[in-house]
Image 1 (cartoon, rainbow over the protein chains, first blue to last red):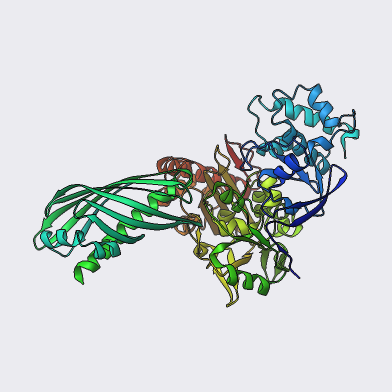
Image 2: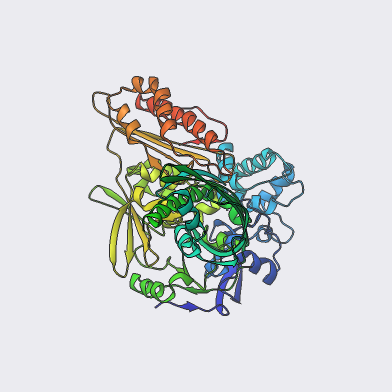
Length: 165
Length: 148
Length: 301
């Protein structure tokens, strides 16, 4: 039986950063807007708005997606992870620690996207090579730096057992 | 975009000149032109152009002004318009030169145009192609109109 | 914000057909949305509803039957990349899928959506041509198959009618003893050029079949059968020596277009350069050697 979603009433039930969420969203709502405006999770940034730069990256059931070009309704029943979900209280995720340790953050605008992409990579390939990290990060653009410290951080994190999710 | 084409037409220059001013018949020859009307004879016309670029439909009301008219020899016009739905702006300069070749003519078409807006950026490569195809099609239809 | 639309989620093809018939041009078919949502965001198209095909049964399988491999329309690029079946039967396709766009698009975008959108600057159609791909289309009136080469008519233009949807693409895996390479080049998000080359070597060590496809540089990707013929009979060493003439012949015949990814002349020249490199890669692999060359702004698969 197909369900018809009218513009005004799609119910969206999912978990966001481990917490159950139930919202009414229009069919045309984009995930980034629901996260930023309805759930006050400003970590994902609207930057290029055309899924090229990666600043809006969030994980949906572990898969990195461009939340700027992803309908919120697609998250139905899924586990969403945003950068806000990486840390637990005052405890940073090993990836965040690694980024700090390796100086991988300058203005910080691309950072949440970098972290989320890295998180997805490490879940799949716990000890990635530099080349693998660089390939995976091809869709995350940074205008401040030369990427090498970001890659250093992720490679280093990969070698630490507690980083493996 | 830029198109130059020499189009043979089986009509003597004077008859071809007359055909070019025959709005209903010329509308049928211009690919994408769905209607045109005369506002000021031999000076201003309004035309509606429709074209598809993949899934994107373009519908532009064009304001056409004749800038030069040398009977049986040369015609130059300017066309401008904007698709309000997708925000694409079109501007074109077209010159038509008639070269006599005995009993028949060659119509020298030179068209230079620009599409501004998002479609212009995305469609850059396609627009030139489409313009070339449209010019060829115009030539073919004009031949048929001349014969009919 | 997108303009509002209704979202329909049929679970069978007949339901989908009814929706298409009801809404016609006011509806857009929606799979991954990686192209569609961009067009909607830019306001380049306007629709009243989206018809989500991801819940239609039978469109998301990768299957093998009587020698051919079929990839369902809603299969994601990521699934192609990781499919054990494709890694075994069409490894170069799986390899190319790993480099489509970026990792997010690979997780969300679909094979059917990509081929149906026919963006010239894309890898999938080019590599699929090298596998003699055929598209399956379904409508309420029936099903039909059409070779990919005939399906793609031009930039963003396909032979799909408004009442049809792409259900799958069927590929002919290469015979044993086939070596291939895919080279893509460009500095932008989408490739400026893609070259797919594969040769089948006879037991005597000579080319018995060749496939050369070039895409991205013109309105549609193309096979170059005249150039392919010239490779027949060559040994791996002959092939290496023939890189330049084969590349020149391809550059002569290729249809290139000026656009924001490069001028027509530049693309013609890059076709020459990258076909030469592709031949070098394939010749090395045909001789049992690794090909380790790397080129700026290019990926060698």
